[in-house]
Length: 383
Image (cartoon, rainbow, N blue to C red; front, side, top):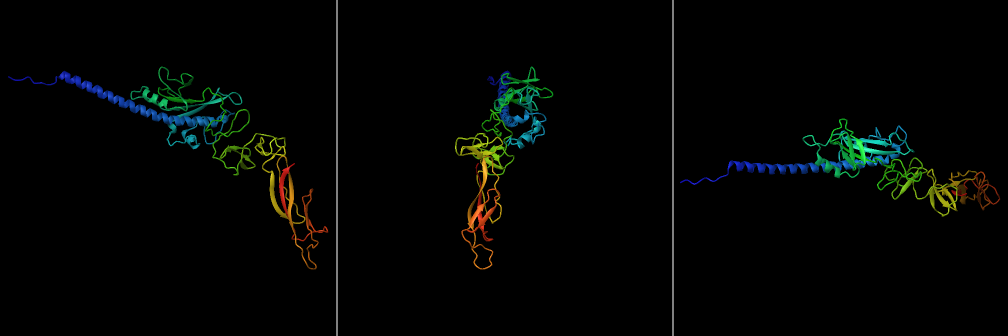
């Protein structure tokens, strides 16, 4: 008698294979989802760096961008639509990430439309991707988009989608903009900064704007220069910049440390030796209870002068008077007949207060010899 053969029935095998296919497919879908999430995070980090650069550009050039038209920002073909190349050249993009101009669009807008300072006016920035984020079937790639969004911290972010792809809303409905895509496609990512804000003149940590103290708030032109060393040449007079340990300003063609309030020259002051500046940038020093010009105060020069020559007086700033003082006199006594010298001794040198002419004479009032010299020190002293 034959034993019955044991085995697996075809229906059971088919069921098993179907279950295995579902498991394998599920694992593949998980891996695909993980890959899309990682790709979204990477793209989000790039977008965040871009958002930071655009926001810094907006703040640095804010006062120019809200001024009368036409507006010009050196290095930018259109100041309201800077490209990735221009932002990188301007120092606003410093990461090594390569950004293609064709992949991104930046647009800055006035709010309200057409406003011009000093009327209430602000600038907001809109940065968008030129191509949509969709899955293989042409639908919103929500995994990619959600992972991307959480990585953007330097701007508010939103993207177009059903039921109305023509409108993009972000930050829990606090702002709404039109889809910048000409075809109003789904999946267009938009980052917004400054929308609904004020002119934001206040300086912040890491700000590169020049502080130009013109009123109760701090405003300034582009603050995108290297650190300037006190004593180096500068232009224009009165400009401000970053110093090695503070703020420097251009005073008389040289960078000078700023450490005082704005005062009026040759007016009263209280603290001897205190520093201040005039509105035009000239530095002041408190001497004998008056604000005096700091740059020209004190010693100016030393030089030798002969009898009958005129002393070159210094040009002094506000609250100061030029003076010349004889430091020493040298003359020779020439012995012998028919000599051109003066042998009277006790040589005296003097500077005429009206003409600044030097005289060097002997004890009898006659001119000293031709080799006689007076060492003259010039300076600017309080009036």
